[in-house]
Image (tube, rainbow, N blue to C red; front, top):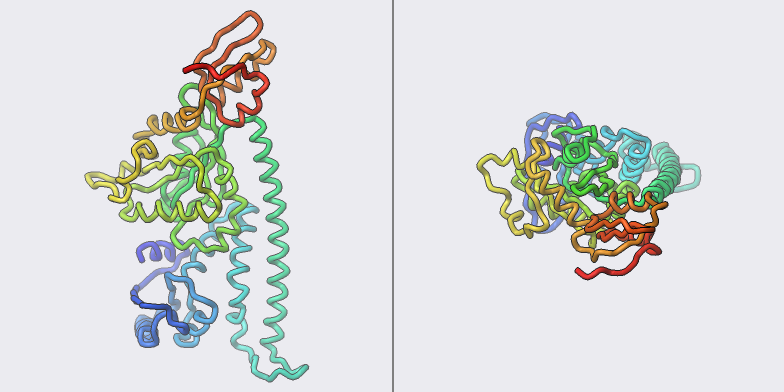
Length: 398
């Protein structure tokens, strides 16, 4: 409920009261039982509120039933999240993604705009009510706009694929920051790369992906991408709409899953993040769990659910003051090169660009200058190994 409170405040709605309604099974008419529905209605009238917001998603029919019962505007968590995304969208791509989610949410709820017009004049030809005619016209407009937005997003997806392909041709290892909203991903990106991505202590501060170059110890360079934050009960149509953006996550070599370790619900937030990752088809990437905001812990201990994480896969940091950042950089470097077998390369002197590529993307274990070539022993990401296959001499003995 505290999270729903923060969500509604993010769209400039002032909450005045909250109620919880335990149910054994969802009621077909109101989600809750009729007695509880009447209690909520009487409480809303007593407080003279303008709107009632449910934390669970309401079906269009349940939403209509509630509006008839209360005479008030009825919203659910999904509608509030979509509105936050609409307010925060800062690029044409984000605008399109949010518009698609909004149109698909509103399509089965179009009745709300035309309840003042009669739709009960019978079914004979030429006798349909004014509201029914307008509803059909609006439905056609919505369907046409949905098709148009999807075509535009396909163009965006193609453009992203081209940019991704160009980056892969460099080649350079890639990493992505993912996690629950307001976990501090943008702040961490800025701390690691010196970027100037927008950061704020609020839900869904940014909806854009930002990619910057990260220099690791030993000279390796990595492309690091910040992505849109996740949230519990993230509307499915928003996940679908943002798949073009989240594709950056799917193609990353490793993922940095950022968790606000100071939040009492941190373990649940981590579970939600993994759930969304599975939904978009990510289950085999290397993952480093970054327990962020250590500076806000004070004397408190982290959520006990986070204490079960393997030490080698998690690190406690503060993106704000820099605590633990060096350890995180070492872990990222180790994730890219530590588990790979070293290869030995014979690079001609006139291909020094390839020598630079090895230094930039891998971990050089040994470097010798011979009469007609440079002999390198290094651990490399797969993308670099594939490009340098013809220069590979042999697998050296450890």
